[in-house]
Amino acid sequence: QSVLTQPPSASGTPGQRVTISCSGSNSNIGNNFVYWYQQLPGTAPKLLIYRNNQRPSGVPDRFSGSRSGTSASLAISGLRSEDEADYYCAAWDDSLSGRVFGGGTKLTVL
Amino acid sequence: EVQLVESGGGLVQPGRSLRLSCAASGFTFDDYAMHWVRQVPGKGLEWVSSISWNSGSIYYADSVKGRFTISRDNAKNSLYLQVNSLRAEDTAFYYCVKGDNGLPYYYGMDVWGQGTTVTVSS
Image (cartoon, rainbow over all chains, first blue to last red; front, side, top):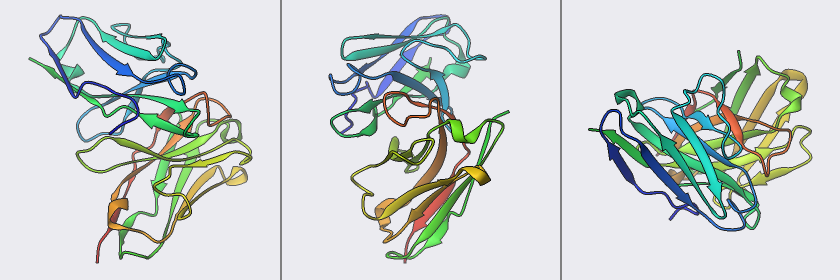
């Protein structure tokens, strides 16, 4: 059972907009920056969104992040087949004095 | 270009030890916190340990506390993870990850290495 809660799966058709949620608490998302990672099959995770809503250089602006209270979300617009991957949210947890991850969301592009 | 190259993984018997290393390049190593994250094949990501830029703040997941030791050598641009008393459940892919700040808390992680495999089996 992960401290951050994500839906195990999500799907969409090419061109659609998909949102992945990440629910936490005041000790993690509510008080610390949220990060999102994309993991393509057989590869290491890659940073997608940092500090709640910032995009690293090289990440398409189709990807966006937001945080509200103790929840965060990742939105992917203009869905493409290459977006098919696992997506993880993460944050520091003050109560646990450790980093916590969501369980991951497997995105399928239909 | 930021690069993190892990080494030291392998097949080890339960109860034995390993030392994982991570060679960093392409950035000012002693400006950033560093982290270890592991992943059982087919499963999610699990944070293992974090160390601040100056080794002044160190944190461990409860699952490894007392058995794993994180350290860094800023002169050698290297991160280490001493893993002792290995258990079958420690079998995983271990990633070295760069922090995006000198502190291991509040902020997060940005660049990931390719990982090294640790298999604990008799």
